[in-house]
Length: 153
Figure 1 (cartoon, rainbow, N blue to C red):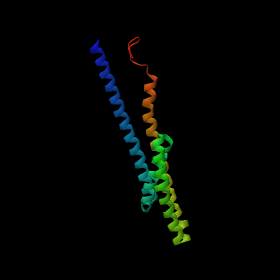
Figure 2: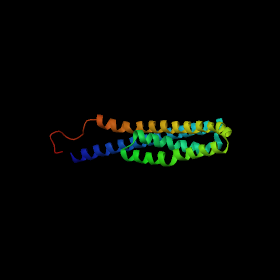
Figure 3: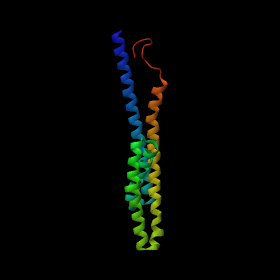
Figure 4: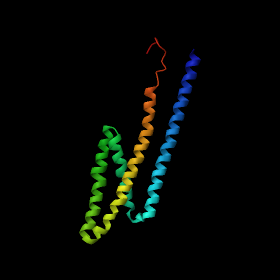
């Protein structure tokens, strides 16, 4: 009986390990596709001069996904990242452009498009990855317990 329990335990461990490996592979694939698509759009639209804003958009998108999907501690970190770092940097950048020349502000307001596109892409990528990993918890909850009936807990 002890050998059966050990073999069942080993099989469950292998299934968990393969499930985690598969989720890591899918997460890497999703992140690669999202980053590749955003990099391609950056090159196609000529947004190389807005690389800083693109990176800030990625950071803001990931922080936004963390705020909507994460724990209370994650929401605190998100408030710090968005409220104290990303959005003030964006405001300083756009304010500096507006002060130097009002005409150039209208021309550089196009720089918001790469920021918003990268933020949206990062948010969607994080949501997909989060759903992928949360399906693991749902499948564990749906499976019946493997503990023998009438035995000790």
